[in-house]
Length: 511
Ligand code: HXC
Image 1: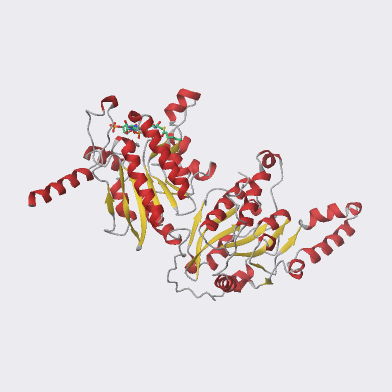
Image 2: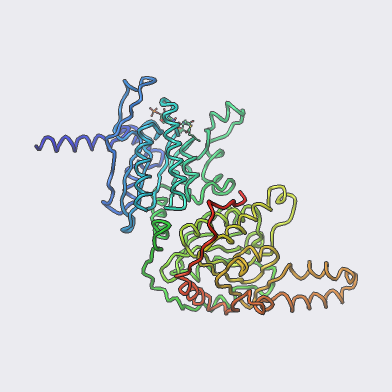
């Protein structure tokens, strides 16, 4: 009997070696951990249950039948827990055929995807792989399409997270692109549909992997990635933090963590957050951190479209999505990038029943040919659409400017905002005083005295929260120092909100 048990241990030890010690050493030399080391760091200690450790490929072409068969076939799959909550995980093993996907490798991922969807728990993929296994041809392509199909079916039902931890191409970027969030590791991870060599052959462009698809490119320019970290360890620990914010599925309750932060905590410093000069910026993050439990904020897309801030915080221990215009960048204006970024975030929150708190200080949509040619109308409409279709609790606070269409868009009362607050410093109008006076009093334009008088009149009448409050578009004008308490109370009051949109197969959001 003992020798049978020993044989199992031997088989397991062999499988754990993946592509062998030499390739593991290369992986480490490149500053990367192995698939199993990554899983161990990500999950609660000792919680990993591995499946399909002994699966091998069945390919016969290109000498594959005579070559080495490595148990596990380039992906480590299973489930475990993060702070006690179940998550499914698969990690590409770059030491085995570069983590490329074969027919059997795909079946392993599909099994985990099916289990995650059936049992309603998040799934996280750790990517370090070169796409479809070239030697398997259409069997690998088919395998990928099956994985993609499952990504789509799971979208909006369970959270799907991808972490890019090495060079990734082909299906190893398309599958992540269909998940909710993508994170990268700086200097060791790349994402491209085709790598630099193919680029050179097809377009004659010479480009490095970093320039083509490094973390900097994808967190700033392309916005493919939602964030980047300095190394594998940091990335995986941050993923544990993210999981803590997310419900396990669209039918599950929000996770609730103990908080020792008084929901009625007053922040006197907020009374002076808004500068006297309306054109002076201030950091909206200060407000976010002062409202959040323990100042804990997990930012999404921090480096892209920085004129809007999106991320997760907690109030009274429960997750809340935060969307906030950032006056520090482009005066917080809404442009195409900011609209798309916030729209995607709002839709994620709505899909997973996460209430949304919106902080508004927006001078309007960004004018100009660059924006119009780039499709601002449609991109702006995405955010409008996202807020309008969202049925989760929506609490909005206007801190300063809410001008023009941007007032409407930013979770206004008219888009079924549940509780809409304003600070006394709010200015809710079609536009700022100068532009408005120059248009409606064009006849007086050459008379500076009259213009000054008209401007003062406009500022007094319109650049305040009270015109909106008189109509009930603002439910209350609140003191800045009481913001956390008022938001916490609003969210608690809205906890059992029920609102359903008319039945439809799905909507037709302007893509
Ligand atoms: C089989 C592969 C492979 C692949 C890498 N390897 N990619 N084996 N199929 N797709 C193997 C290599 O042969 C090598 O084996 C080992 O993995 C490490 O690869 P290297 O090239 O030495 O590593 P590196 O220099 O770091 O480059 C990594 C890489 C590059 C950028 C990922 O390997 C690459 O460009 N691979 C091909 C990418 C690609 O075009 N894939 C097909 C995409 S099509 P040894 O034995 O030497 O260790 C696709 C279809 C999906 O995915 C559909 C999308 C819609």
